[in-house]
Length: 244
Image (cartoon, rainbow, N blue to C red; front, top):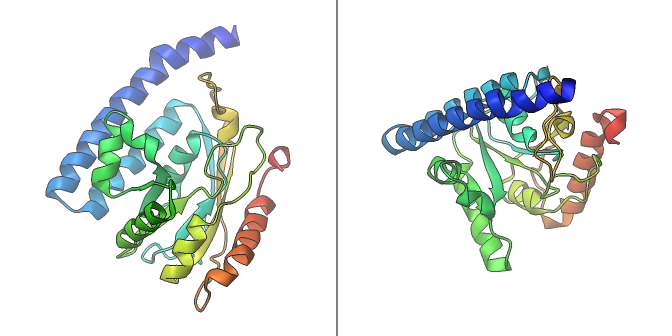
């Protein structure tokens, strides 16, 4: 009975809500960023879009903020990547004006791709070193006036709930710009919607933990592996036992 209810709720209630609020949010972002300030329109509508989606999924949200993170400063946030709901959890509850570094394929999504492009989110092109340098340059351009960047160093959602290997792109950006790295632990999105499935599980608990910033002043490429290891260890320390 519960499975039947969940199926009906997903396709008759949740999905229509998701589609409608996504289209409205995308239009607001595209229009607002075209005629108004990117900093507001590229962040505020998506923030409330994410909160609506989390509520529609009947999720219980736990937030552990960090007073050492200044909302008026720029950071490079790095987080583990459990599932699609990482986006909604982070956008809705990090409480930091952010841009995303995301896969180039997402540019093709109706409404979302164009809105992301206009809002200044960075699409990753790792096909060659020249393209990667362009990606880094674009990221550096967006990290101004208290705007921060969120990156999933794993590069893809987990298949088995465990963290994968961290790539160095986020750390290259952070060291080049001398911006603090802030590790974020995300718990629970894997239980809501796993990779390679369309079946959702409603009423789950999700948690976001914001850890202490890791300074990068005076650091360079030689320090990247140490930063990767340190941030990964911090993120792992906040994971629920089932995700370790």
